[in-house]
Amino acid sequence: MLTTREPAVLVLEDGRTFTGRAYGHRGSTVGEAVFNTGMTGYQETLTDPSYHRQVVVMTAPHVGNTGWNDEDDESGRIWVSGFVVRDPALRPSNWRSQRSLEDELDAQGVVGICDLDTRALTRHLRERGAMRVGIFSGDAASAPRERLLTQVIDAPSMTGAALAEQVATQEAYVVPAVGERRFTVAAVDLGIKAMTPTMMAQRGIEVHVLPATATIEQIREIAPDGVFFSNGPGDPSTAERQAELLRAVLRDGIPYFGICFGNQILGKALGFGTYKLKYGHRGINQPVMDRTTGKVEVTAHNHGFAVDAPLDTVTETEFGSVAVSHVCLNDDVVEGLEVRRGGQLSAFSVQYHPEAAAGPHDAAYLFDRFVDLMQASRTPDTTQGEVA
Image (tube, rainbow, N blue to C red):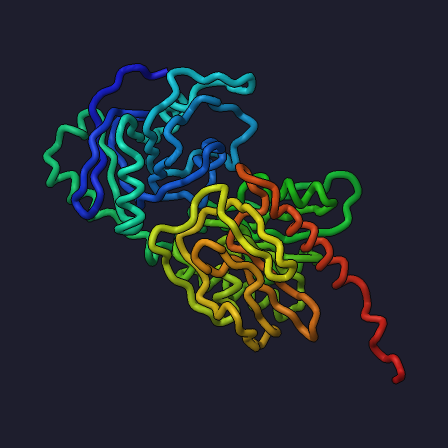
């Protein structure tokens, strides 16, 4: 474990500066500053591809006490651009830990900062909104502040960023069903977390994970019972290629389920706009109402964009009637959509993470809803052709 704590500095694009100590790898990094309110699950957060090009501020004050293991990664690497904690653990204390969090950050070249007031930083982001930020430690921290601020301002913005293809798999692969194979699903990887195909496999689904550049012909070759679009990073306004793919899926009548980025792409495919939230939803304790059941769930989130759809109006589209199925009770942000044809559900999506790694399991039923949708699409409508 690294024990030397050289000075470090965090510089926001509006000029506000926080001083602290080096944490993880020494050097410099830039990205979008966002905060995560989870009290646990930092390993899953760090390895979530949706955090690509973001500097994550942990609001929980004490981070690193469960160390790092080789089982809980949600992808093959850490994706965050930087990591900000207030009080790092001196040493891990967990029977599953194989090394320290700081050792892993250093090994993967992730620049961090500690020993700064994360509460004040979080309040600043809540008031001013997510913004570009830089972390500088080691020799980089000694540069003039004006030069550091220039580096931050010159960094690319998240608005207009097309990032999904940067984090998605380059080659298709299959996650086999656990036990008897009941269904086959084509999952378009836009930054998929490992737990998602695992949750489907546990329900007897053979999951064919496809690159973000997948075509409708590749999906048709699989002859899937359903299509899934995953979470992922970046601005959904740039995802026209994926939106057009989804329109082809809907025209083919294949059952669809999407989460996070997959929810935004469904909204885009249906003709709705998207917009950037002031500071987003990131954590594992967001209250969401499922309007189809009236149930309120505690859910895991990681999104900085949202769908601009009317909350209380059914919209008629080429693909059927569209309604907002889930809504965040904190701020009325659209958290889910459903499409119905002839009164029957044909596609649905949610803005949050039902695989909940890490997080509560309140929303795991959505994978069962996907199973029910695929089963219903297999079952012929016995009312057709009946004589009145």
